Image 1: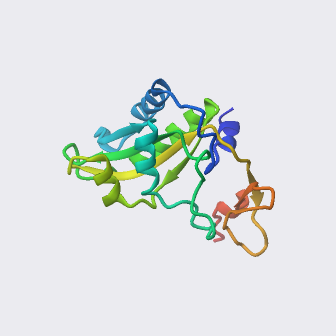
Image 2 (image 1 turned 90 degrees about the vertical axis):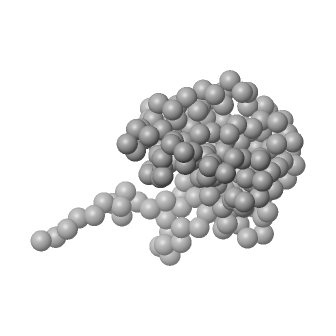
Length: 192
């Protein structure tokens, strides 16, 4: 069951923008992050939730979408996320957040997948502009942004080709292809 959930948890960049993600759903997803492991049990991550169109538009303009798709500036109106989670580090609680964000984000995205939603994690963010747009207090460091919504695209996993090119791509039908290395390519064996 966990394997199926992980296989369905793809990075989606186009959504049915008119399908709302409720505040209750966002809270349930954050609760999964809350229950996840944290370094030193500091629990220094905080989460800014947005599902309002005006706030979503302010967040959207600070994100850089799909670096490998050079001729695409992101989803058009109508295909944009209906919700966002901004992952913040509260520097009043701890100096660093270790690996906490990765664990929290994976928990959120797996929970979203289980609910029939999809997401996209962003690290290519204009953090200064986003902090200004949301009027965030100075002790909050923007770690990442998660876009959420009902997926409007098909994402398939492909076997990595002989060229070794790991860049994702879209075909003429708009299907998003993601090359993955084979399992044996990931397991290191040392011959003595």
